Image (tube, rainbow, N blue to C red):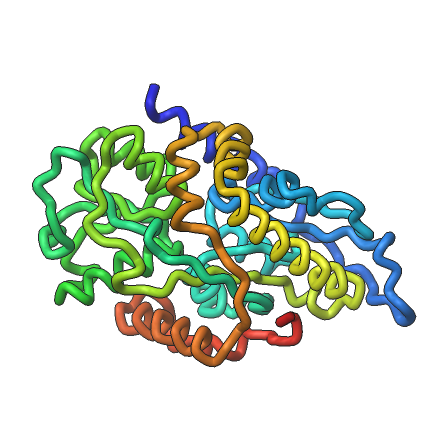
Length: 328
């Protein structure tokens, strides 16, 4: 029954994402107000991931109290479908890793990168089974590696292979959602699994999976706030997003200051082991940072790596999708 933690974490997200994607189709943009913004009339649609749990964090820290606007949360399995939903205007705002935003830009999605966050990258790892003879990235040559396409784990895998003098052509990528990647690793259907926290921590704690490489050794640990073009162009939504960022920053500080309480609450609300939760939030708390030239340049390097690998069409100009007007 050890697989239950990850399956519970992913199950609700898959259902919510499917229902939400259907309901978002054909939705028209609300007309932008011409006078002062009345936030009481605004509904901010925020895409969430169980792995990130924005709603859980904001609720636990008290930052959802006394909101001057409404928030509708919808949960997705990973970053790529969040970017797709934002580009379609189905959600206004989402947080995703360093790679979904690049794939969104490559697809010329109707999105803007409106905020950045920094983490250690240590929870974004390439895992092998506890009894595996694979001890390094070099040992992955000719092996099957599970990974979610277009995720931060995809970038970690690509960059780790390059660092070891290999390419994606030297391994057999098996593109799977996190729950399926976990199952494939534990069954021995794949030799390794590239994934992120809390899935990394769950696999380490529940089945003794071992990390052979983490993103802090090859990639950046950035996450990003992504807004739909429609939300950016809407004064009411934009004002709500700015307020939301202030609340999220306060919630993040609260989680750092109350790590034991936050880890316990996160474990309860997401049905994962407490020790996996504490490991996750010890190394994977995401701190808001400015969208600096350095951040943008780092993302451009990852985008160029995907272009050179033939994983995305053409060259991405990441800076063209950045809107720094939301930096606080």
